[in-house]
Length: 163
Image (cartoon, rainbow, N blue to C red; front, side):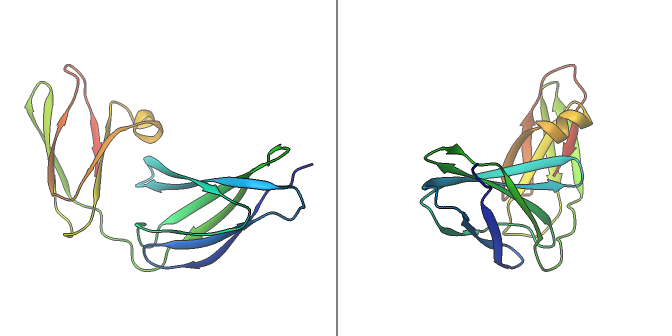
């Protein structure tokens, strides 16, 4: 039986998490697959995937958001196959930034101009979909460091927008 890997949170800050991965077995490990999940505004779940080579590993994940819950899951790739998943949860320190104030205005039947307020020198994610379920599971999205973006949409549809 292949055990799940041990994920240990080494440290965390406002914008990063460091964690170690190891196995409690003598089975040869060729690497790990790590998923980091977080949810914005209870509507949009995002994921970052890391593929890590080697047996033991300490990883630092940067460009995170302050005071945000993150779930880290990992499994090991071994000579006998993949291990079961293991999970840890961590909340970054600091104060979560205020949500931007979004305005969306249709330019024509297939373009919407989105603009918002918020701090400078950060990356904003624009998420849009035709239902709350789609907004959570698989929204259309893009990122920008600007405070506005033009989004192309399908005609004759109503959209929900989140920044």
